[in-house]
Amino acid sequence: MSLLVVGTVALDSVKTPFGNVDNALGGSATYFSTSASYFTDVRLVAVIGEDFPKEHIQFLKSKAIDTRGLQQEKGKTFHWKGEYGYDLNEARTLATDLNVLATFQPVIIDDYKDSDVVFLANIDPEIQLDVLKQVRKPKLVACDTMNYWITSKLDALKRTLREVDLLTINEGEVRQLAGEASLVKAAKKVQAMGPKTVVVKQGSYGALMFSGGSVFSAPAFPLESVFDPTGAGDTFAGGFMGYLANTMNFSESSMRQAVIFGSVMASMNVEAFSLDRLRSLDYGEIEGRYREFKRLTHFEDI
Ligand code: AMP
Image (cartoon, rainbow, N blue to C red; front, top):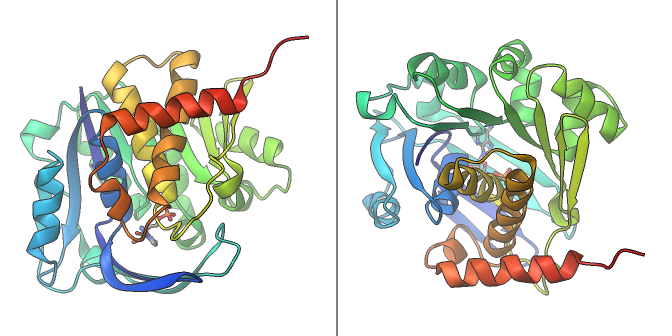
């Protein structure tokens, strides 16, 4: 089935205790669509500048991602600069250069309007709303966001939240959005803003899914080495939504499987810089790690 994503395609400069990269391929929609491409057909809506290397477009095409929605505009590509200390759970943003993103007006081509599933990846909430206005009747709409937009565009973000079925969000950001220290209370408050389901990403601690009145908890995969956590959240969302778009089954048990597929993809992404680990996975590796997750969390009833 078809999955439409709008988000950022970026050039990222990232430093971790294990190395650094300058102007590497990044962006919420890039990580999301590469991850989701292992599960379903992906249609990508984003903006790039004149400086965006052609080889990156070739790479997205090589993953069978539909890039007809990638708009090239005059100016420079969105650039994010961040740094991580030994606690890889928290990125410190050093620069957010919006560049062509500042004036981006997404145009949804006719072939994309009937997409079954829509993911509004982390981007200006006004752009998220603009995309929603242009699609017909998706069966599932989900979104993501981050502190940058919670701080600068709260009203628009609240309008977006009213229109979505599901939100994926970091632990610190769900607390900030709800103005509530307790994670459980914060998730409930955010559910009351619109999304029936709230998936809280907890970095190396895993993910929690609040859905109606139920809670599902998934650990993160215990990895020996993590090099670069950039994009882990978007890669999680790509696996999660990609699986749901593939099955078109939004039952509680299918959503739980989707959380594990999201965790599998995120655990792979952090094992290398930029998207390097996601470039050439095979589906057997993904299934293998899914089964390892099952063994990791299985215990007998008393
Ligand atoms: P994550 O580590 O999953 O939270 O996402 C990291 C990606 O988000 C990077 O590749 C950045 O290019 C992108 N990013 C950083 N800041 C923003 C922002 N304000 N809006 C949209 N995308 C962003």
